[in-house]
Image (cartoon, rainbow, N blue to C red):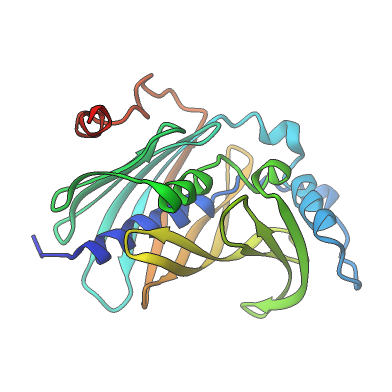
Length: 264
C-alpha cells in the first residue's frame, strides 16, 4: 500500500462529503416544466422553484435513505477508489472508501458523533468546526429543506456553467461559511456547488460539477460528479443508487474504535 499522508487521506474524505452534498434528490416532471424568466428571481423563489421542480416537498419526503456505490478517480494519477455511501434521515451517514493506494477509510455520523477510521491514521473523532461542517454536509436532502438547513439565502445574479446560464444562490448555514449553488435556468437542476469545508488540514475550498442526471425510481440524480479539491480533480461515477432500502438497525452506529474514544 502506498503511503498517503494525512492531508491526502483527508482529501478523499472531503471529496466523499461533497459527493453526499451533491446528491440532493432531484425529481423532475417534464410535463409541467417551470418557465424561464429574464429578470433574476429572488433566492427564495429560486429555491422554491427547485423544490417544485423536483416534485414537491411531499414527494421528496418519501425518500428516507439512499445507498450509493461507485468509483472515484484522481485525474492524471493511477489511483482509483471504490466507494459505498449510506445516507438516511435526518443527518446520518456512513461511507467506506477503499483502494490499494489508500487502504480502507471509513467515516460517518449518527447525527451526533462524527468520526473517521483509516488504516494508517486509526480512529479519530471530529470536533469543533470540522464536526459542525461534517454534520451540516450530511443533512439528508438539505437543498430541499433549505429553510431549516440555512439561516440566510441570497440571489447573486446569473453565471454560465458549462456554457449554460445558471442562477447563483449564496446559502449560509448557521456558524459556517457561505456556499454557492448554481441552478440551471432551464432545468432547475443543481449543476455546480462551491464551498469551503473545515478539516484537520484547515479550511479547504472545493468546486463540484454535477452531470449525467438519470432517473432512479422516477427520481433524477447526478451520476457523475467532478470535484476540484486541494489542487486535484476527483471524478466520481455512480454505478448504482438504491433508495428506501432495508438497512441494519446499527448501520450508523459508531464502530468499536470510536466508541472507545467516546468513553475516554
